[in-house]
Amino acid sequence: MMRMAMAAFAVALTTFQAIAIEERRTIRVTAERFSFTPSRIEITAGEEVELVVRSDDTTHGLRIAGTGIDRTVLKRGAGEIRVIVKIDEPGRYTFECSRVCGAGHNFMRGELHVRAAAEGTAR
Ligand SMILES: [Cu+2]
Image (tube, rainbow, N blue to C red):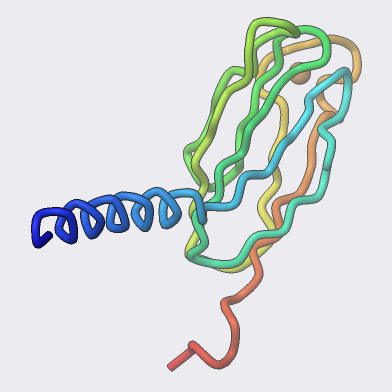
């Protein structure tokens, strides 16, 4: 009987951990000549989010100014990329295509708005 209770506890613990990991918000982004959709993304300072990015046409890039993030977005059909983003400093960060993709490449950008964490948690 005791052994069964222990087994049930172990299963409950495993389930809890799985849920904790899934709490990270996933934001899907599509890149195509010459825009990102959505082009404005809002996150909270200190929040860890996962951007899942895919292309609807050619190879693009995703660079987020001020973060060191610069990834290649695979061409359509080649799969999606996952980028973990966590920014502690509130502000507006530009993200842009970093792989030359055509005439409108230089205009292919968006804004990542990092909101300050809720007032109640500030010291
Ligand atoms: Cu480009």
